[in-house]
Length: 343
Image (spheres, one colour):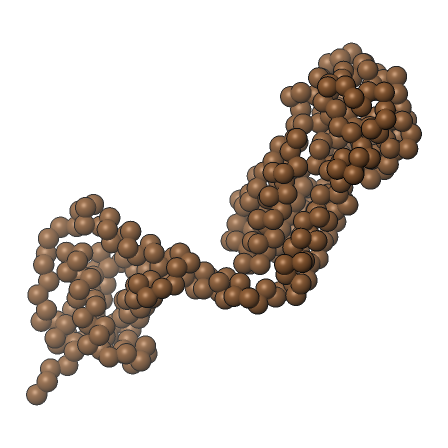
């Protein structure tokens, strides 16, 4: 009479040599393959083995695991025995009516379950990208970016992904953008000088210096650089105190011992740009703020010596847990746009 698979399993001879780093390292390297987006035959073989071990640990029985997974009990038994031989230690303790994890098995099962979760997430993202390209993405941003940098990237993305709906939501402050991404209202956020947040992941960062912005025919537009003292003879349009730019400017004018007397103070970057174009004025912005107008030849950017050390960081953020596959595609395009804009 044929013995049950569990008895075969219990009678197996298992070497009792100690685990050392030389034995463990190849195992970790091979099984890390399961978490990547390579779903060939080798990877799927590893994922099946991890599923076998996980199910045996949950049920305490090879026969029950085999029934749940719809595979032969002998197949599960052979693969687990082979792994134990490779590791040089048992991962299950064989009791008369149950299998329980050994100390080594407890260490291994944590790795296995995390790997299976990562595999499931990776498979979902790959399915999302298999020519379907459907879904919805919400991007939280500041208004100046919405009318300048982002539209070109959105156009490029829409041409490649016409069935994806984009929601571009404007916020007044970086804190509001961060909150929208952290609580799931937005998939991505783009803005300046975000504070650190454990719930958020920095996807891209590009730094640009504040400088003088004016019409191309302005008397100062052709200079290689200017001083704040050069600017005070012209109408100055400046960000108001609610803007992240203003503290830099206040400090710079104070260091230069100059009175800041703007003709316009505003929290709107659009107004600052248009006033500089129409009123022969000067405003102070970064290249990110005037990218469209600069390429179109409607505005010029000139470095200001007193602002040499004052820069703003444009940041792209997502949730710490990650984003959908299609949102990751948009994030890569936004990242490329950020890098291309730096002068």
